[in-house]
Image (cartoon, rainbow, N blue to C red; front, side):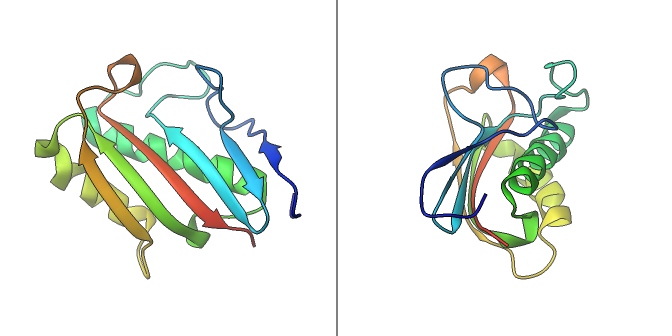
Length: 130
């Protein structure tokens, strides 16, 4: 998918959009992945297990988008984490650390008033192409 023109990413292993947006866009040498909730791509329901399980699923969904675009989790430059409750930060952070074990990307984490469908966490990413 590498190129200078804007290209929509189609990721069969990630949840389908639940609104009028693309799960990812490639432009130039970058991939912009939309915020992913902890939705199981098969059922489109939240995975059970609370914020840890939702964080893991969110990151697996991002991984699927990045791979479909020709990138990888190791090429992530920046993430933004949206939490329903900042009291869940340590739980989210522990799972996040499983995915970014060395040279982690830049990150912002914010508490929000609410997330789509009542999710506990949503994570978006910008990555370089391989």
